[in-house]
Length: 219
Image (cartoon, rainbow, N blue to C red; front, side):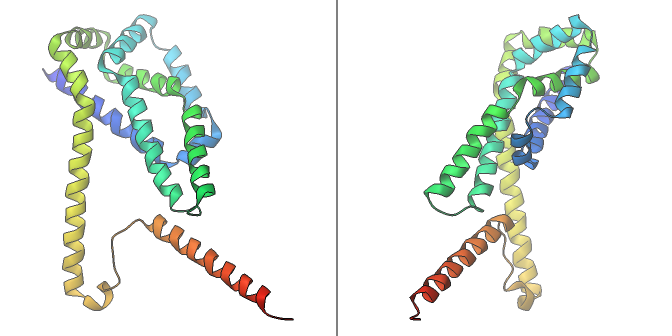
């Protein structure tokens, strides 16, 4: 049971790490293609005993690790889409730019490289015998249910965490506004990048209006 719980922890941890790393710098990832880290992970995978590596990949298939990575990448793409939409013009060209980025991101995402990295993670945390034991567990009906439910549980944990964090943030801000109404009257919770994007769009709009007005002034 301890081994099962340990794998569950590694499984959830890997899920969140994939999402976090993918969402930290998605634009750079989309532009750079296969990174040096990915090449290093591939080299490390080649250094693992072939039989153990094969068992790990079988285990990853049973737990749906590749699907987990794809799910994390999809989440990162949507997060990146929201951030980009806040920084480009709010028109058809702006939306087309963001859609083109998302398409390019999906093409450049190297799932094989991420899979290699996960193989090295499993190799570091589990011995040959433990991997074989986990294969036996995940080949059982209960193990298959755990593998099927873990992505859903991970998403629900994320949603619960976001809800609790948002509630705590709103209550804390309300408390601080009561303590110092003068400073707190302009304080608000929001996406700073979105606010900056809206400000830039408004500034461009004002500049365009000024240029149009100057062109209409009779010479």
